[in-house]
Image 1 (cartoon, rainbow, N blue to C red):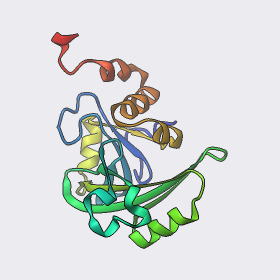
Image 2 (image 1 turned 90 degrees about the horizontal axis):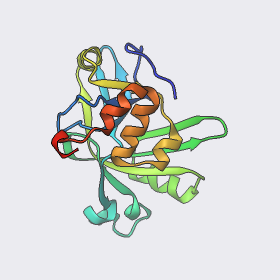
Image 3 (image 1 turned 30 degrees about the vertical axis):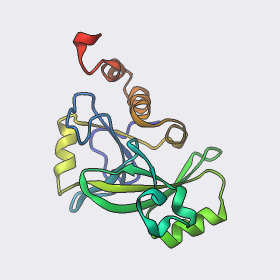
Image 4 (image 1 turned 135 degrees about the vertical axis):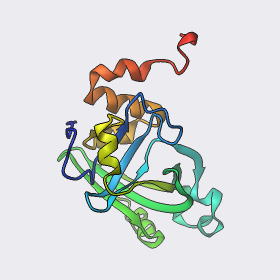
Length: 188
């Protein structure tokens, strides 16, 4: 993995990893896949390490008997928490390529599942994370986030807080001890 620095031109296709000092319940210990970012429009992405423990078939009858019934659901972010966003990706380790299909239709997701490409991951996200013009840049200046390139192997292998710790530690080993600190130091 490489650190993209404090002021990358575009965060599109990157991961935003919350700094250990970011204690907002909406973003504490999160890894966000940024789909779109521009200086003029802001940024848009989904939290990829907050599984809901449910699948599409569990929450929407229309998917109950479709190939999408078993697609896992994640809390994508604090904005519009009832909006479903379907995404798919493939990590190709031999070339180090991460192919992202973001905001795809249910028909497209079904077709991709039926093709059964090796390594294809399809996920559903309820809600998203969004920032207005200049907002994410200001948060980066305040060290609220660490920007990381996508490591598809880590995304495939690790979930929840462990994914956050792994990516944070790989990019900034000096932050690993903060990431491992207990929420309540008196219980250490």
